Amino acid sequence: MCRTAFQSPEGQALVEAFRSGILFLLAVPYVIFELLALLAYRARRRLGIQDVAPEPSGPAGPVR
Image (cartoon, rainbow, N blue to C red; front, side, top):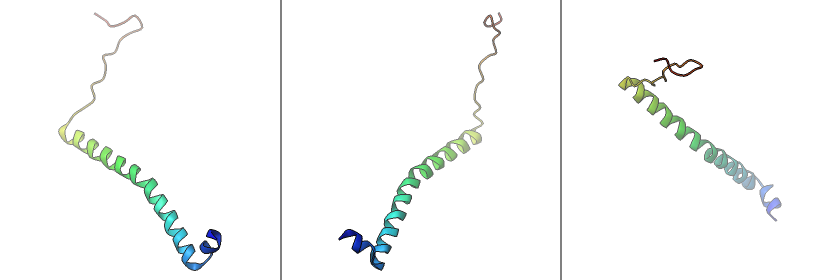
């Protein structure tokens, strides 16, 4: 019965809407994460915060 219902024009529209909804739900978390990462990057750049590099040490340890 479901197969017959989905073969009608109304059923095809429903299937397309379902597929679009799934793609939307898959994409939203990535978009939110990218937006937050971009905002954090811009805030760090605006404040002039730089990553502190560790002090270089030779093979025998730090130089004193």
